[in-house]
Image 1 (cartoon, helix red, strand yellow):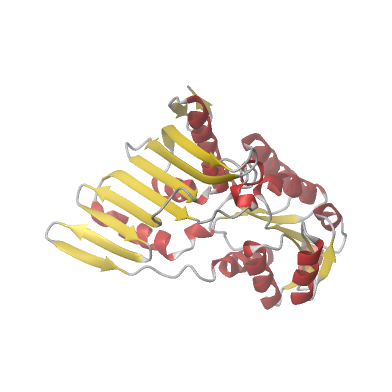
Image 2: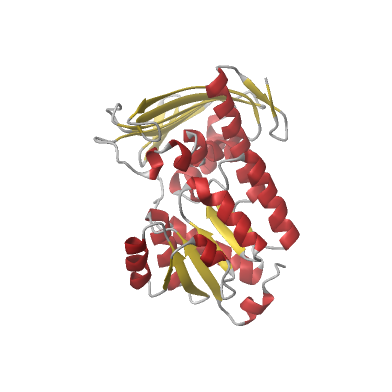
Length: 339
């Protein structure tokens, strides 16, 4: 078991939270609602927002994440801030002997992510990378209905989010968000969880710039060839130069197809179409938090491993290389890349 018995014996895990945005809000709500946790402190980028957030959840406001990870009264650090800083915060927290929950991606750099997983093992600490897409209704419906369509040969997954005007925020910043399919790693992780290892990838991308650091639109389209012969196409776009929103997942098999359009799903087979119920996307951060606490207190299995997230990150990194070079990038079984 993890090296945290002293905290667990008291019945409370003392938590420090980094971030004040959407994910941090849902984490804070889940933490204060669970009797096994004590939300000790919050660290954010903007002092006013951090103070208001801390007041709302009745916890201490800190000026930096560096101060938070060094506190001796914190057992678990939850990282819900800009993607660029995930790796640095996780490394500092693990080095200080803390357990870590981090929203995907673990890092925007593959090598750093590998080092963090090794560090967590050497410290005998939990490193959990959140992938709530696996807990949601769409993924559960996909898993339940895939056997009905027979051998699958083509998948298309498209998420397009027009924004008029595009917000000037970190998710539209090259450095803070990262390459689109690294920052939005769940799109790829959903595929690798369902279909296994990737053999080769290619990618085309385009940005419409506001200035050197920020863009008003990004559009990225990638093809993934899986070792089982499946061809998957992933489309990701957001911003001002897009006009029609889309959240669609298509699966085409020899005996039928699955079409999920928004929150509606259907199974299409010869001569008939059957509606598929898709569960809610609400409450997933709370479910993830509860599962992590169950794991820490009782040793119950988690729904995802850091290694599985790392593999998806390696696929994303290969796609990034393909986008920059215009070449098809091949992958080994372990996720290493070559031309």
